[in-house]
Length: 463
Image 1 (cartoon, rainbow, N blue to C red):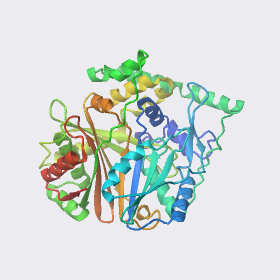
Image 2: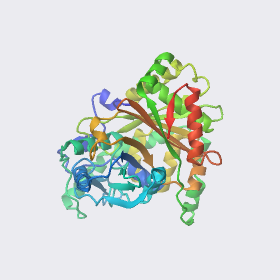
Image 3: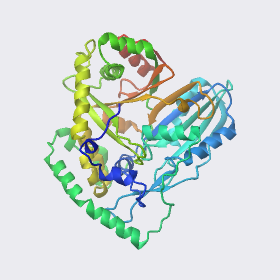
Image 4: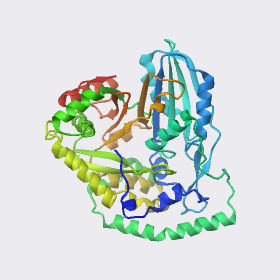
């Protein structure tokens, strides 16, 4: 889904947007929300694109793609302000790390495990690399090419545009300053002035936070956070492989089914997310699903890492099983409200430089609420260039990748996130789902996905 911010509708843009989009701003201030969240939550969210090739890859082409990506919006890292309350900024990182080659062949059936294992590759938006390429050789002579991008460096739209520019040979000079750990008195003074200018926004954000109604779930600090506050540290837990499956739908058939129901195809995909949440037991006490849909606010020349807001709809998976028109009206009403009034998280963003990491965890729970959110990102039509980073690929898979432990998943009540996109006459949906003691394997998730498709009379292939 896409949209424009309420600020732009009122004729002005937010401070973060101005700082990142203006080419004359030498400090190139970075949006700190995703970075603070990354450090606070420790999950290191990354965007994950994988291309499948039916033949070996030319190493020279892969290296050239790697170099071209470093000349795009991805060629940057974040530098913290030396002032405790100061804003972070982007600096240039034009030299990519070498491509990671996995030359021991594996069968195609083992590719999901390989993709999950990439979470162990070091990706860091501050110390670098903020992104990297990896290639896995398959035992039938084919290859898989993956790119991992820190969600702090770029959201989906920014990453896609960077890859399209790299494929098309359009180098970008975003004007980021060269990296340096030394701060001149002039830069320190400007940073202090900008921080002082932001104080009214901080006061307003604090007032907004204090006015919010408190709920039991929002006030409860997770057990692991309480242990950290008391100076206790558990031994590191192993990462859990959160099941991921892919659904392939014929675009024409999906559009026809949506037309039969009198709704847009994106509404049908959102309804699929609610039915899948129902199948996984991810519903609140009233049986409803908290559906959260990101909305892009990215403008031409925008240099923000994450130009995203979100709408939230409490959906009834039973009532909307056959009659989706009320569901579509709710989605459109939520989008209209977002464009006019904004979302719940953006007003709190000015507080982020001033809060400790444990409080950032608490703020995340406050925004999401105590119920079980279900993410559904509908990206839209993929540019043709995205299918051929190193020649034409036979398959493109898009998903997220995060570092979860069993205790974190238990605290969160599991996880469910869907990414839907269109390419070459097909609609593809990647589904990352985990329900403690219920859905913990790909086989179990694939079964639930198949049932949810059948609920809506959708004919899709689940891989």
